[in-house]
Length: 501
Image (tube, rainbow, N blue to C red; front, side):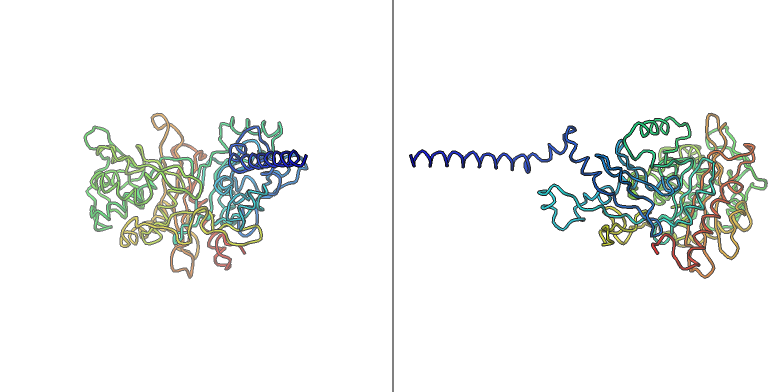
């Protein structure tokens, strides 16, 4: 009898061991396949079972979490949603995440391994850490000035701090409220369909995901390339440029909006935006030098992330001399995002050194403990490259000051500050029949500052007024001025642009 009991006990022990082995196989070896199975809702329920971490601007959260008491318990909320939508993106139970909500999802959702000191325990307990926070570089005053400056017009603004690459403002209009996509009910589906069907594309981030012909603002790049290559050595010497100018190898002539461009000096041509001078200058500088300078400024770089991806700005490297002439005045295949053109202006302001732009100052735990700096995978020191020689940058700053003080950019002037800028109107559409895009790029140095502290790019797609009267100075420069005044005002009040306080 004892032998039968012993055999039964051994058999039960083997069954228990097999049960434990199978449980371990399911829980450890095959856990990922079960977690990834669409039929398994445990992960989704756990994801929305706790509040999401916040995105902060100026030390204050612009996001939140609302308790719905439903199975997917917490929905994302947004403060001033349309103002910050080009930065936050959306976090939707139905449609996923975009922009910062996507790039920093691990921190915000609590799944980043850095948020827990015992990740193995979390795996075994099937729990997750509380969501962390993302502190942005944005200056709230500059962001609002850009948003209100654009108003009902279609366009975008990007502003950066030249010495560091910190993004101070990133605005795209028309915008939308990300909160309408947060839940999973039928109203969310209707909002999604409405936003995607809108011809104005409110969910398109025009500041970083849309490229435009930069028009005459690209003359900053052309002038820098010519100065670096030695094609121009004297800012005030005649350039031997006919007006009109016949594009090389063609019978097509190029004209100017301004008078007096024939043989104008580089200074005069830059002040009054002479197309003929810069088209010939680009052709004379050559495709190799022009390409090198454009790429040093960031063109043709597909890997820019801030930390979400940025559409690459392009400068065609396979052009003939006629196409190069047009490319050199920001037409033909030359395309740029507003962020790229802000980087161009920032490089001029920073003695030719271009800092990599970034949007995340640091990530923290929910109670403020530091996780990382400079965003996902970032470092405290941002990489940089020399876009032009320091002497060239000094000359370009002089030229850009002349534009504001004596030329076509007078509407960007700020009392008590040194401002440099460049206007632009970019033709587009079939046979250039569309309303020209109005551009303005600039930088500003406040009273008492040693160097410029803000660089801005503005593009307006649907500038009002007669087609021939659309100008960067009349439409875009006042918006840039408002953003620069906001940044300089913050600094002069001692708060620092975009720093939590």
